[in-house]
Image 1 (spheres, rainbow, N blue to C red):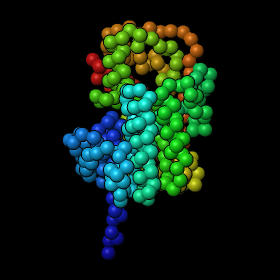
Image 2: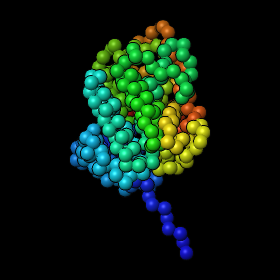
Image 3: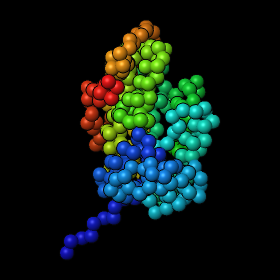
Image 4: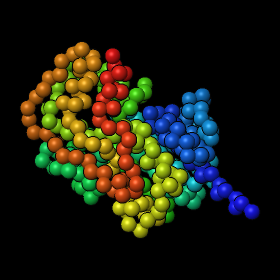
Length: 304
């Protein structure tokens, strides 16, 4: 007699209509998960096998409780692209904690949070950055500080296994893509945006590679481990850097300005020239599939 198949995991994804959230939904669908795609506007969730649109405000504790009930994992991806510090804290910080606390109360097994490598101190001279590196200082800017504070708050929760994925610049096409769409638009419109130190590190990862790891962690394809270098530690909070190979601002800005037909303005000065080390992610079995030439070609093709 054939043993019954294990039940398909149920995964909640907030911000399911965003660049990262939509790709997480796609990767989860490919892995056979049932996805609760949480969006604020009806008809904006990805239409994919196994993906169910849930319309509501995840910052509302009652809705958050309903959306996580019976789920195996939750993936949080929301942080405002713009807005002042208050708006970022209300949605990105307070809202994510509402979801995290609802997941804890519901007995959800894993919480996967899309953090950022901006939480690290990357001032000139710092060098390479791993998960033990110093965090950004209070003068690092609203985005970095609020994301840093959220990571610290999530680390302070007990009972649910938490994974903080920390990507640098996320490349990949899309209307809401910061580095493939929004930032190039600013570079085209404003000469001041074309200034950069060419040797400054441009740490990056492609959205497809980032969300593949998010989906593998959320569905349990990355197994629990006692050692954080091998997998998520049960009941603990494990940060994981998710970065591809080395690149510089000459690579990124040079590609964008060439495609747009404008000139970059190269400057001299101190700059961070280290790398975001992803050894922990590699220890979890992750390997990026999109290399720098492919990512830059995709970027260029989207701008010409």
